[in-house]
Image (cartoon, rainbow, N blue to C red):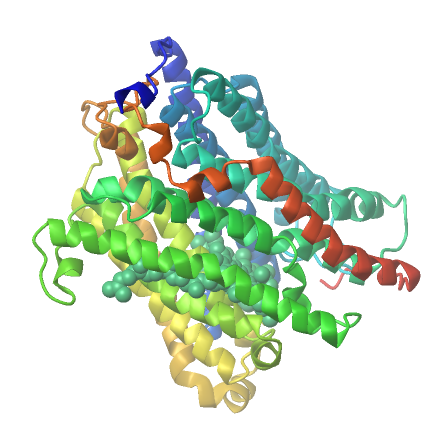
Length: 577
Ligand code: HAS
Ligand code: HEM
Ligand code: CU
């Protein structure tokens, strides 16, 4: 047997100054990302209070002229800036630690700088009240060129981790021929392949339609084509947010729990299925748009249910992983294992609590994904209810949980308060659940999303929405609890960065699994190559799977664009504020 063991190649450990530079870069991504969340999510409760009938906007006049200006800032800062910075940091930094290979720092810095410029441009465009076009920027609403060029830069910068990952993986493959890519790197790579293919939609929309339109070089655009290009990317974007959270669940959490991952191969399968199924389904956001045949809408329903499948695999794999860990820690009975998890660790608590919210977030996704049911909930608060129980909880909380170990790891400073970190996780969980359930229930009463309802006269508000007053009150209460959660989180986040006690930097969770104190070298336990599962091997040809995904995507979109291009409906721009 030992003859088949692959021996670790002798590779130079990255130099301490290079490691320090990588840490600084990761920290920069983290700090910018979470600062964007501070601004974006800070506005969220104002919107929640809008739905409970409290209009705070007149008091905020010099900063926000309208509800829609605030809502645009909220969607853009949270949906693009927070997520992109954290993800583009993590998906390079974690593989670099796992492989023990230095990433291409020029490209990584390039990604950061381009996105930072983009952020500056969109902030200027949103704060000068010129671009209240909401985060989906549907034409014919028209904002300023700064907004669209800013988004173009953000989009471009977010694609750059892909070449960095490809370079690192090929360097690793040269040293370890015949072995499958380590799990975290594999997942990061599939995520970036999916994302870079999908950005063709939004980048085409921005470069061919919105950028020249905003500059006045063309005078009209076709909104149906824009919306379809937008959702070509706009659906995969939700998996671009989710998959890095899954990287943490599959790649790191089992070790944080002191257990083991139920199945490495299932993790790989999950990612490949997400790559294949997320690209063609964007038009399920357009069930209410004209121009799609009923047959195509039916196919979209089937494809959408298929993309839920990898998350169901994840639910079972994670459920088992949690159970392993809980039983190992002495948990007994049907749910005793759940109680026995290391709840005192804020990083674990944030991530496991986020999984619970995903049960509701995922179920509401299946409601949206069915064409008939979507007709009931489309454009109601049910939809933001759905996605705050996914991106607003699963993704935001998992990233917060990661920040709780990343800050000590990157800076060598301890968290200033473990209790406050735990409070942040629990308050976010309670606040987001109260808010999300309120939003979803209010949506079933027909309360519209994207509506400044609190500006209505008192009687009109009560006549229209009186029946939904309990869920609408829950929305406001959830929002206020979320403010408290944010206060706890940011005291820990910035407090620890500035004042945390100096400690020895903790190891990356997966480093411990491989028996290393710090995952800086290529020293992994020798794995008998024939022991790697055949499923994991079948998932290894990433270019093949990307080709399949791209082909299916093209097959689904070419007929749609073909008919749209033959029946163009051009519109001039509107400024509705
Ligand atoms: Fe969605 C709209 C369908 C998932 C985000 N979605 C949105 C929008 C956003 C968004 C931002 O088909 C609105 C954009 C806008 O502004 O208009 N979505 C789905 C489906 C899924 C789904 C089928 N969405 C997500 C995720 C998001 C996200 C993830 C962000 C991260 N969504 C839609 C549709 C629309 C839509 C329509 C358009 C609606 C309209 O009318 O506009 C699926 O992927 C969901 C699958 C998930 C599951 C859950 C698995 C559960 C897990 C946790 C397990 C728990 C454990 C704990 C292990 C099936 C993994 C166990 C312990 C115990 C003790 C029990
Ligand atoms: C929209 C509240 C955090 C992403 C909304 C809406 C509310 C809200 C009430 C719907 C507004 C409307 O339809 O009129 C909150 C609260 C938060 C929070 C109270 C917690 C402090 C987050 C986070 C994310 C996020 C963490 C993502 C990472 C979005 C997006 C929209 C939205 C993308 C859609 C904006 C649009 O319709 O144009 N939020 N949110 N939110 N939220 Fe949040
Ligand atoms: Cu979608």
